[in-house]
Length: 266
Ligand SMILES: NC(=O)c1ccc[n+]([C@@H]2O[C@H](COP(=O)([O-])OP(=O)(O)OC[C@H]3O[C@@H](n4cnc5c(N)ncnc54)[C@H](OP(=O)(O)O)[C@@H]3O)[C@@H](O)[C@H]2O)c1
Image: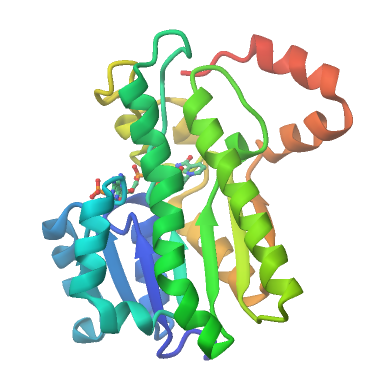
């Protein structure tokens, strides 16, 4: 086993469930010191207690959609945050609402969580990474970050925004000769609680596990792919069957539009 992750401080948001939880378990097995974040402190403590060398792992409970919660968490954990080697912006919420029915509040909640949360934490770790001329910032996008489709307008917008932001940041760092790795991850369907937690038009939970998600990758497969790609310092990675649509949109845009118009999401 390579010692790539050994003693690295890896901060994973959305660690209480799904892909984030699988990342925490695998990275801890590889010798990383993980920092677990989400809004649910009890779940994070329970997960931390199952990890090898539990006392080498830490918890930062925070709500990434709330600037005040982020700032309080950063102030409480400054020393820990300054030592982060890898940030994985994984916390996110999806959507199940037609654009003309979605409340502004539900749209803002999605943007605050998926975009502003990720960028706030990135700015919190960036300067110390720049001083050390080392680090990695990984963000979970989605195929919805490469194309829009029904019932996902704000979700898709939030993931597109991550691409604009992190592609720009990568270019700035490269131009300045700074050795920080920036990666975007576009997994197709992964069998998690994402559809259950997705927001309906009024901002309440969809509270339904979409049947299509059941045919997706396991969170463990997805986490394994992310870890491997991080070791190789990839800029962008795709997983799953849905990636074919990214290429169809790029090379056959009118075919893409006819497919997506007929697309019947759960
Ligand atoms: N599953 C898929 O098919 C799929 C496909 C493409 C991309 N993704 C992306 O993968 C990432 C992980 O999703 P998942 O599938 O693992 O979903 P999940 O099982 O619903 O997990 C979402 C995680 O995000 C956390 N979270 C949500 N809102 C938060 C907030 N305001 N503050 C802090 N933490 C928050 C949740 O923790 P608490 O509720 O405990 O706060 C939970 O740990 C997301 O960015 C998602 O967009 C998923």
